[in-house]
Image 1 (tube, rainbow, N blue to C red):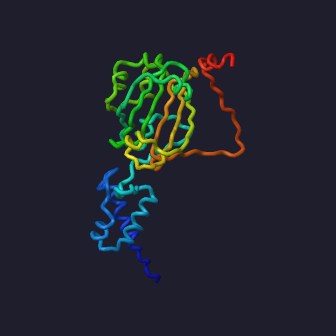
Image 2: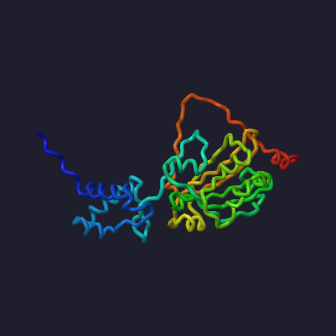
Image 3: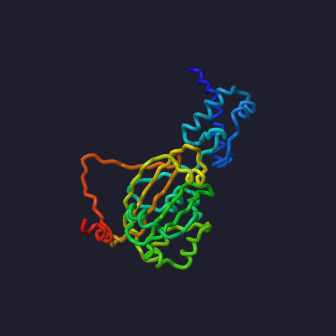
Length: 264
């Protein structure tokens, strides 16, 4: 009978730490014991501890922050292409609680709005999106003033700077009578800016995923343009690709954009 293969010590430690993370003994975002502490506590070498921690980092359960230590990784948001869901719906569907903290709510710069596809007077809503109380994303939404004028008093109060609540912009749009039908998205990546690093507690430098979304109603009315910033290691975008399938994507040109381009 073949003898059972002994588990490597680093794997044994990784299993212990993994169980502590998944059980909540180490809360999301919390600092894990240092490598010297783990070495003393479990009576193993520093090199073995390093290999165990590297395994957790590779699995996405932990993240190293230079000069600060190793932390339990924040929420990893998963998006499936083909389903149009709000941030709140996406987070709730994964078993977490979604909230917002409003940073600012002010008149949008028309040039910036137009560069994102909104060609009418709009308001800019900047808010931190929280998942189980942890900052997970920074959203800037450009919403036409004519749309916001139809919001209920309760939803309007949720847009005041400093407000923290479980407000959902998609829900507010639907409460105002605008059925959300479709959206187009562009996903890019870059380094985080200083303001984004501060809000999301990121190192310098840190990579972020930028999702720019235009949301439309059934009658092709632009309801919102959003620029969402996510820490790259906490955002997964999944899509299914089909070979030999062709389809046409409708081209949307806003009527105000037509006016702006006349005579060029």
